[in-house]
Image (cartoon, rainbow, N blue to C red):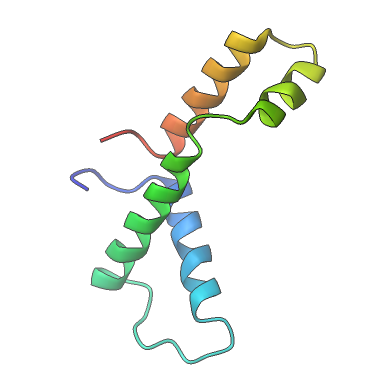
Length: 86
């Protein structure tokens, strides 16, 4: 990753790190090389959500705020902001 991680990537990275080492001593603190690894995992996880499921689109449309295409575009814009595509 050439850019600085986003706030959401850091949040997800920390959650993944804590989940991995839950209740166990951490072999390496969440910084430096360790942080880069978990941010990479977080970015991949966030990017995997880029395409909303039918259930997600349906839930958004129930709010009567937008049509299906708008819901998809809005969702994808939010995912892109959380973890910009490379």
